[in-house]
Amino acid sequence: MTAQADRKSGCLLIISGPSGVGKTTITRAIEAAIPGAAFSVSATTRAQTAADREGLDYRFVSDAEFDRMIERGEFLEHAGVFGKRYGTPRQWVLDRLAEGRLVILEIDVQGAMAVKRQVPGALGLFILPPSEDDLLARLRARKREPEDVIQRRFHEAKREIGAAIAGGAYEVFLVNRDLGEAVALALGIVRAKLGA
Ligand code: 5GP
Image 1 (cartoon, helix red, strand yellow):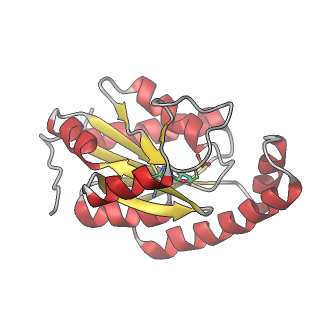
Image 2 (cartoon, helix red, strand yellow):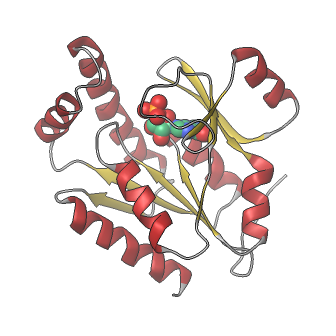
């Protein structure tokens, strides 16, 4: 099944980028600034952290529930990331698009490629760090994980950037040198796409 999004049926925005690059801040700023914008809450099998709000950031589900959701065809796409599973809710996204809204997916590169195949009109935005050293410093500054996990995320981030460039799912690569500037640039790109 394809889910074509035309001008009347809303706009799908895919935002990706490596851990620690500021994509969640940029995503939430776009959601707040565009009237009617809707953030898609993914289901995940990863553990909830103190920073996560159930139902707002993610829907936390068991492996068995995730399997049932796949069987019932509930995902627009789903992928394994860092050994855990993540999926985008198909019906919710299609319903919001049908309402003519901007729907924002914060998903990884594999997910972006799968969504682009189904919704070719989606806008893909990939957030880049200014440099590899900067990315490593940002991952450490979050103080969320031990050094071995930080190193794993750092190597995964470099691999993901390569995959994003090679994969063809992104129209825009935006370097986050300064968060305010990156938010302003991202908003300008989204508004241009919406014709607003
Ligand atoms: P985190 O666990 O740090 O919140 O997210 C890990 C990665 O999974 C991030 O790159 C995030 O964008 C990605 N992700 C979150 N939800 C989904 C989803 O529904 N599908 C896919 N493919 N990736 C997702």
